[in-house]
Length: 341
Image 1: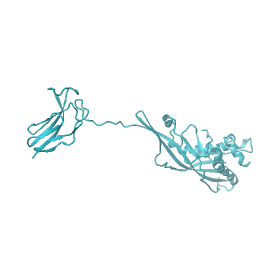
Image 2: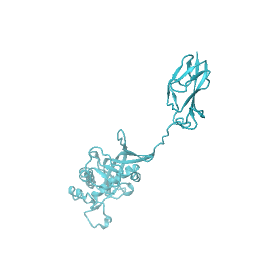
Image 3: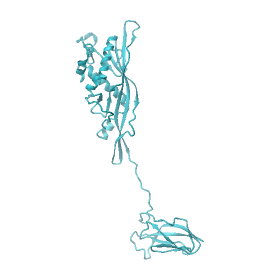
Image 4: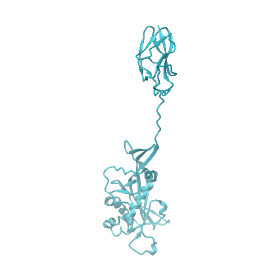
């Protein structure tokens, strides 16, 4: 991972989303936030402590000769040193990487906090075929403790001050407080102001009183942000059935005469029927109870007390068939009613 310089952030930054959905899946690292944050800090510090690091010149310009002696690139042991002015410094983000090797810089996580983005974490969405795809911002605040550990109090002072420089003024000069991998949809932001520097502490090792390990903690809170891409199948929308019989698209609707209406005897009623087609025909199940006109305007005329049905017929031979001739018909619907006194 190559950390690239960047300008200081202006407010809250939403990291660019992956260019394709495939990139979003291949680079999905929502569950690796803490590991990636520690790794980014590890590589950032190494760029200062390694003599060939990208930010080594920043450190050599502001530190004393005793400060620039801490390097991470030496591979030989203490007995075969070729450069007496360089000290192998172990830089580790996990305890297993540093088992009692000093001087050392340890990166230890102290937990994290979920960041509420605001009203909506969705930054983009689109429909591709039958699927919905959306990109969401996922942000955490990761608490880290960077521990400088040496065998003397003075060396711990020097090494811890180097770390403070890296996380402070040199962070703005080198990366603008932003650690980013150009090939991944995530970024880590170093703290602009929050930094807690503890006191030196010492512990005696090997059961004696001469050998002591001195440590100092620098606590920081880093912002981790990435973009998560999700995809799901759109629900299939099925329109409700509309009463197709014999090719009819919809059923007629009696606006002023709903089913089971009561019609007073001696009071003819003009029927208002919505969606009635020209090829529909009307009839009464019992002409002794009431009659109905065959052409508009449609009048329902009560004749005697009782119950009957209004029939709506459609031709079985399809739309356009001449219904005035004795053609075979199919019952489309019926509307029950009663004639009362």
